[in-house]
Length: 513
Ligand code: XMP
Picture 1 (cartoon, helix red, strand yellow):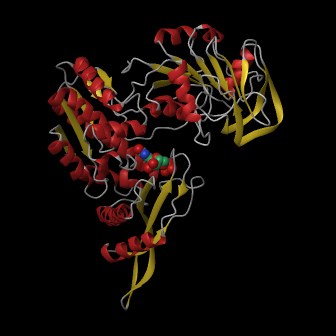
Picture 2 (cartoon, rainbow, N blue to C red):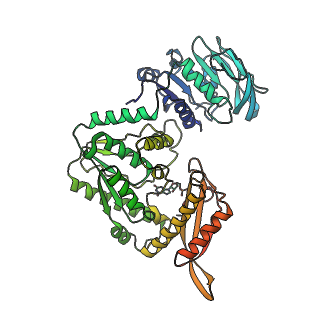
Picture 3 (cartoon, rainbow, N blue to C red):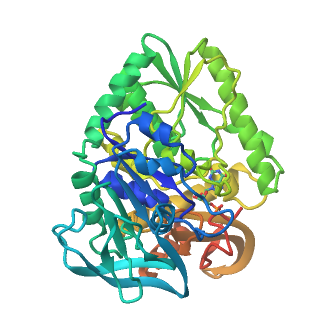
């Protein structure tokens, strides 16, 4: 499955920046895929890649278990760019020498370049690059020349232009490498001959066309959550086959204030979709009554979600396809290299396999999140939905500590809505990656007018993060916090105290449960 004529492959040697390399390549309007370092030369040739990039990795080429590529890759006549470990592996495999240094070269490092080379053409003769390595190339393989060096690194870049083999010891994908993007662009455009046809408008047109051909006159079912991924996937399928798509939106009553209505309004009214909104609030609350353990809550919600979805799907009758909002990081995180699976996907919506559809459609399978957002905007999905912060599948159930009741949910929804309004009013929506209120389950003493109160404590949580695996607490200006606190106390009944969570992850998690 490919939407473009050109593509590049990134072979993943376990480096932390493989996805970042892919994003940078796509920023140059070139489609790319991340594959395991074990990918055979034949497979690469058959897929018709214009270029190959070796990622970095944590190993030393001399270690017994060091990941090695299929050496025949160098003879495919497809340009190769090795980065960091990938550079060392290229040198080692082709007969150069890699040595271990006493000191690690780390951080921003001035590197001097040979300007009359294709990769460094049009760049400054010397610029800052990001280094992070202990091993280094001490002698280049035959046929290679040194095209970059730093004070501590004799071979910061090397090439064999005749064979189209290039290598960087530094990381061009990291933003600290000042001219890194230009170097990648030179590789992609000058060496690989790419023209840059990976643009979102053509992705949208091609995908709609492809979906239309694939689906024909058959029926598609989609579980809509109101999150970005499922929304964009559903709209793409809807544009392709209109009412042949039915979306089921299970409203478990654990969504944020007004969210259910917003989702309904957008998809039913704006897009005129076949939308089934299932009001299952009572059903979920009944099942959750008295449950206090977070994992039990998750399990109950997950199971109930599947049950409700199944019931509704049965009412629709036979469908041929199930559409899912899987995106590229979900695909690659499931493991391309030897690295352990990084993230366990705890999304509600692991849908049943026996509801009678024959195939799964995942129109966003090749896209990163920022690309999904661009597609969403291209399709006319309102920007507040496209830029919506992540929201856990179990919803507010994991933000009401302890057992869940309707009253508690209402308090939390109101407090959370005020927090979100004020963050938006302060223009902080995009700079804080996730922010929400928590009903802590703690009651404390307060004084209101002349009277003593004994009421609920709301905690506010705001984090900045790139991958949600680690996070820092957001430095929200005091004035904003003050306003939120005042408004919550004044406008939300039964709350007499507001606190702000100043814990990073680790040691805390982002959610409280
Ligand atoms: P934690 O709390 O683990 O959260 O630091 C990391 C990210 O995952 C989200 N999250 C969930 N998402 N189902 C989901 O779909 C869940 O059960 C769940 N728990 C946490 C959380 O909101 C944050 O973005």
